[in-house]
Length: 102
Image (cartoon, rainbow, N blue to C red; front, top):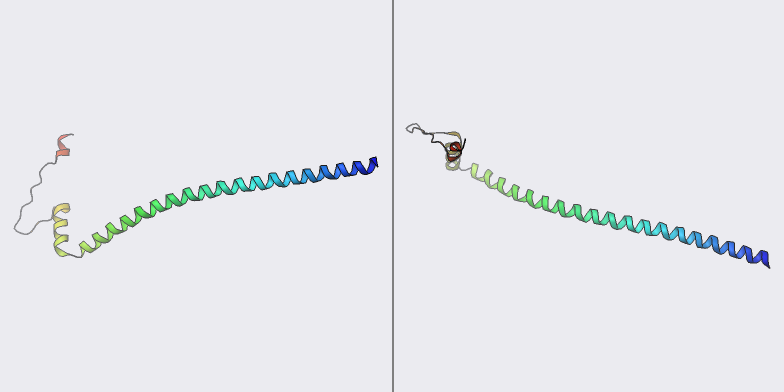
């Protein structure tokens, strides 16, 4: 009887160890999955913010492309940014307020 009792105790001890090891493995896997999900959610939020910024930039660029199709806009833009003048005009460049600070 003592031998059989000893085998039962060893079997129970082995079973307990296997169950404990399996539990540790499952908990570790669960924690890794939760951390991976959190990281994915954070990355998704960043990508959505980037997408919104890019959509806004696309809208702005589309408007600019549309405006560049208008000859009057192109002439105004050239006059404002590139000192473009008509044949009978003289361009005078006035110092900006930023030049006073230097």
